[in-house]
Length: 392
Image (cartoon, rainbow, N blue to C red):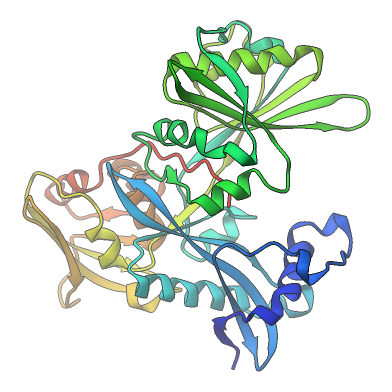
């Protein structure tokens, strides 16, 4: 039977081939000197049949903001299976086994960026945010940009640490905003060769913009991958910097986790907007996830019936108790009907704050028996502004 286990170093070139075929197939087969391969971030795991590698993926961990505090957020990246081994359930097995590993590590949530939302929804992940892709001529930002009294300077791999505080400040108040490690910061400035300009005010870096410039041979497009600002003044200063490229690029493409930009610009008709589904989250273990939720002020007790087709340890009934100081959750007997029922997808969205209770009932799977239960769940799961901006 195929087995889930760590991938030894000797499979490194094979991992590279799996990744390139899955995510960069248009580049054709590549040849790599083993000494030139970058060190892999995270923990590589695979599904093996004996010594044959059938499917792979990488487990990563981040420090992430969560409802006003910090948690360890798990992540899955680079999950892939070559075509000769597809349609045999290996990704499903990988997902189940990796969730069990995250459960054993005590990680309360696992996020990923899906290649297809419906595929991972069928495995219990739920969308945790949407994003807007804006395409516009750089001059269209002139009305919302302002030069400001600070200074601009280019940042590169040698001094990336100067923008870390601005990155943290931009994530203040956003659930799933990350505190990136040194390795992840180096990765952001490696490979793609992006430009990065920092905006400094009173001796402190209060914002930065990270971008690349692409060309199809006739026109140039500026792709803004990250625009982080500690406050509104810094954001206007960065908008101004982007607008100054009107002599070099014809189009700017900018991804944002909110849609208010059109309310601020002078001529919204200059902007083309596309709403997209963003990253997804999943609970690896119901008790660990619910006990990570900050304690509501009111005490209460509810029983919740959870369905989880992938992770049998989550499929059952749980008692959730709050006493004003802690949240406790444990499996309970299913002899009596629960106060609420929900599948693991919707429960994950409630935990992260993407859904409030009303929305989880309206568009998700949540079913609540009475108003008292609804009030208790409202107190436990107030909605949050979720903003996981970093692709991994």
